[in-house]
Image 1: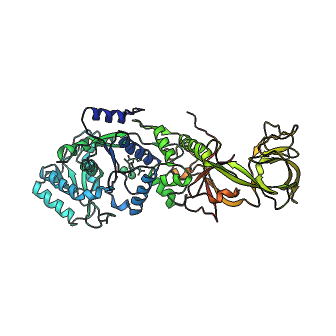
Image 2: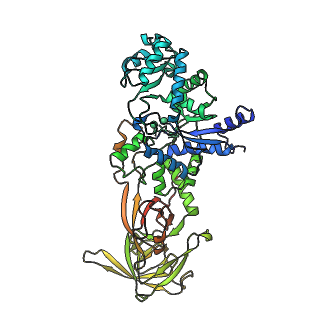
Length: 553
Ligand code: ATP
Ligand code: MG
Ligand code: MG
């Protein structure tokens, strides 16, 4: 299929296929299972799986699990669930870097035998010092001169657990004068005496990312290994291993810019702090930019895929506007979500010309232009709720300024009658407790008679037939556009008021909402039935996003 947008990766792949450099496309998404996936990962998933889909290739899901101390099975499970939810299918079984540990070990022995690797007993500090820096060439130490036999014996001792963590490591023997620091004898294996979530206590030495990643790609026949820009300087090393090892295929590495969003942090380590320090309730708290948090917030897979398409693939770092992400979900829900009514800040309205106990059933379309979504029934009863902000006694406000209910005037109740405000009831403190109104007969779906001019249309819920619901409204988690880019700790920019829980009244049909079902609450915003806590007996809705689009494209 010819590419539509033709980003640089699509162009490379098209060319490789055309020129027969590769027969088919194999990509991979390689998360480390040390946290939950976030929106940045989601764009990488869309990119890797998307390219495979576009070019009839395959994409693997591979856990890059070479750091056992930070990794856990719960993350392994959550990551698979997220990728599936986003709508992607990996090729075959899930892969684990750890299942290649035997092979990596054999390749380490191979490099030693070729004279291209040695066991170094320097501690971290002297190793760093002897490696030099941009202005200083590295210095060769005694370990580097060891014989193959001595290195084989020392490496065997490392593997057998005879040395402690930090006592020694296996390094490639490349070039201590290289202008690229990554090429100055990088570490291949380090000692870590921790059990691994997949391999148990089989190993006490673990390969470095650099020694593992390209070889994982080669084993899996990955053709285009796409990673983020910070690995650009590692590419010569990636290629050095592919050149110097008897690997079964020759993958190539390409880099693209990380997705960064303003008002957001996208780093598993920082997101973990928000959870550990109780700023949010969990990794899937709806305020979190994690895939599971966004899911609970009411984002749809389609909206995340759309956002990923909108940010595109760039070769230089930038910061995307979070309003672009919000636009993607708002647009999706505007087109697809059923409409419903919910009153967040209830004020009682008594329809004095409707007898108590009488219920008139109003039919309302679930969506203005999706008849297939059907209709719902709104019981119109003597006692109703409207939102407190939809009423005023101030009769001086112009019709243009206040398109709601004013003392002595008319307003239309959405999908029901035009009503008139006749009398305001207050308590001893002067707070309005009720408004007594009368409905104008024959105005359902009909214009009122001459001389009656409703100021606007407001939403409402029957006070006797509606249901109470817990409604969670969210604001940004950070009140700074670049929370982790300044000198201060990013935690100082946490918005202390990112969650507001209110008890609202919702129309009776919402009791039947399925967890994760999204709605537009008319005039309020988009809401979703909470995936974990919503039920018919205790309705819970999370605010996804407001109605007003702030994205300027
Ligand atoms: P973090 O700092 O959040 O832990 P990471 O890069 O260490 O990020 P990995 O688990 O190694 O996380 O990432 C898996 C894949 O997702 C990698 O290929 C990585 O390049 C990609 N990725 C991670 N963060 C982003 C991002 N913000 N934008 C695009 N791709 C990303
Ligand atoms: Mg990583
Ligand atoms: Mg990381």
